[in-house]
Image (tube, rainbow, N blue to C red):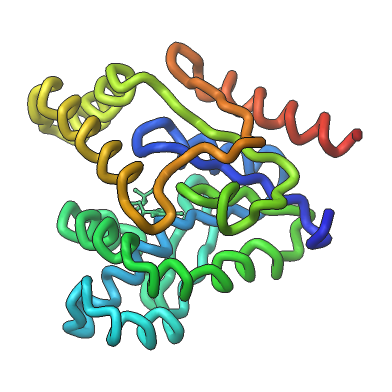
Length: 229
Ligand code: DC
């Protein structure tokens, strides 16, 4: 372990099940969980609150350098704090999701967040960390002990998202959700700065048709094999 901590990189497209899988995996292993999407979301929220445009690189640079984001796992929920403010819900509104997508395409933001992401994973009392994101295995921790690329078919991801929204009360037609996922995939994979792509040495795990438990077991087995090696 080059960093003295066991690093699990969990990358993949939106809707593949990363957030639940990473939370359950971290809790199974007794590792720290770092939700890097929540960090991009917090930067977007901070920019909005300070009146900084989401494409204003000159203003975003210093903003990122001073952003204080931390996590606190309370029961089932991973709470996100921006300074002293609990922003767990505020970062997940549709407007802020869009803003997060915009700021995450700015190299000044991506570069500025590298050290924060690494620090959150390494400055933990736990023996390791699970980092969930898009470029953990390729950019943030290219030497991670275990790299997993989580995928699921577009149909399955659309179906899951549809169920999730229905459970909250209302959902657009399945076909629309399907088309939005196709569009977002193209955007995430096609952007110039750190596009979503599988690390050459990542293990692909297709979650289509698997239960959450089955996926977590697969990842825990990879970690145990590597620890035993
Ligand atoms: O995983 P999420 O939906 O919470 O991510 C929010 C946004 O941040 C999304 O547009 C993708 C982007 N992101 C990124 O570019 N790199 C990461 N490591 C994590 C998220």
